[in-house]
Length: 286
Ligand code: NAP
Image 1: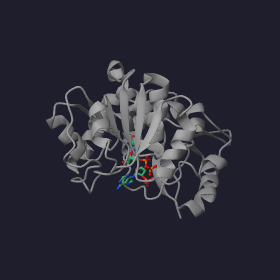
Image 2 (image 1 turned 180 degrees about the horizontal axis):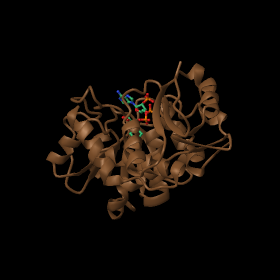
Image 3 (image 1 turned 90 degrees about the vertical axis):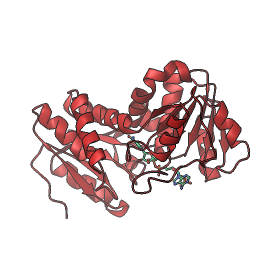
Image 4 (image 1 turned 45 degrees about the vertical axis):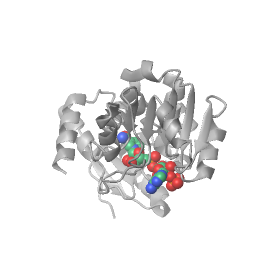
């Protein structure tokens, strides 16, 4: 049984969810902006999702984040979704207004803010994306909207999920699907200007794992973006950096998707530098 604070309050719902950095991020931002309200963690299994959402609304929750495994399951419980959430089929932020639930996907914005400084190195170039889940879909949507790459190769261990992506996005982008043991993977990776890891492989506690074998080499004209933010530098990123590639971790994406949610709930800007400092300290201290 969850106990709720006095309204207004905010929350993250997921299962498991105790590892989330969102409570620290939003509590820091609310305090820095002098805004009332707490941000709580609600661990809820799928069978209890509907009941928990009703309870959150009744108790005065002003908005909440949604994480694994509810990003898709929440959609039928909402009054409406924004364009990004509709295109991706996943919601990570909900605004509660006059008892109505409005769903958003701010991950797309997080990806955009991470890649924006490198637009010229992505536009018209080849991209390789590892994974086909919610994060991968946010990456594809962002690439389509903002960077227009020439082509996209998606690498997956589940071909059916790859085919779903082709059906969803091929009208707007040249998209092909490969398996992790495809003999052409080495060449695909060499030809890519941007390589994105949207799998959890290499995430804490399995920090020595990498989604690509150690034989894969990178080069200085490449950008390697790992959506993982814990650890700050994954084994994949260390390997890419040692070959001179530009590397990006998932922390900026995390901060910017959170900043967009904060803005939707409060109408205020998140204090980005303070939040970055606090989250980096937490991630460095383990
Ligand atoms: P998801 O929807 O569960 O998708 C995970 C994807 O990874 C699926 O395609 C899955 O393949 C693949 N995968 C899982 N284990 C694998 C393995 N051992 N080998 C190869 N592929 C594997 O998860 P998600 O929400 O997209 O999250 C993916 C990663 O992105 C996580 O590390 C998450 O923390 C990170 N993320 C970061 C941010 C941020 O703000 N920085 C935001 C969103 C996600 P199958 O379909 O075959 O299972």
